[in-house]
Length: 194
Image (cartoon, rainbow, N blue to C red; front, side, top):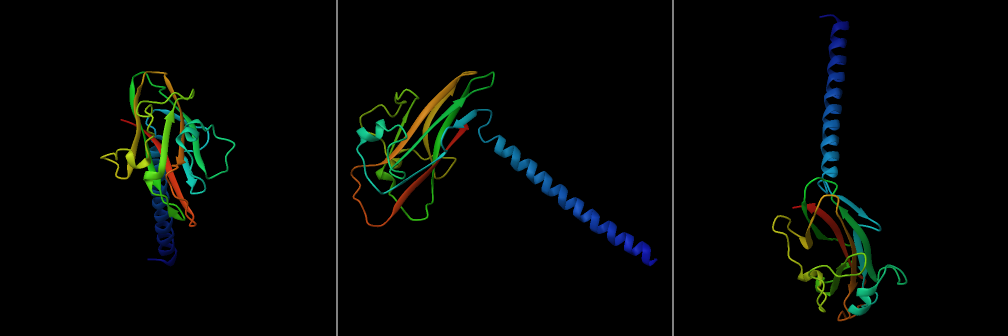
């Protein structure tokens, strides 16, 4: 075998190898992109602020204050607040679930029984499960059987072209005893078709 043909074979092998690797990377990218697009499985979900709520142990507040908080006028870290909407753009009825996943923080975590959670529509009317005088804590919510660590916040059904609007508030219960050590609580809000 001549030197030229051996050099050609090596070059061909190297180019082929890189083409195969590039194709695998592209396939992986396409699959992961499709998984992100399926995150809400044919529901349009829009968060006006963020899908992650975080608070610190700066100031416990009463349920009366927490329930009426509108997202401004309080120091950052005292109370979490976000608004979001879920729309069904499909031609069939869809049942969805809103669930929460606790995130690890950089500091000590606040115990979940001190984190109050309140869900209303955009006109501050509480959704089912939030209308009683006793505001639930993060600890009180049911863990989803098929998603360990995820807690069910709300389940509902949307007709075609229908939209649900939400205000979600979290705050530190007034039964919490202030600590000199910085503590935080962070939760990710997610939606899925059920």
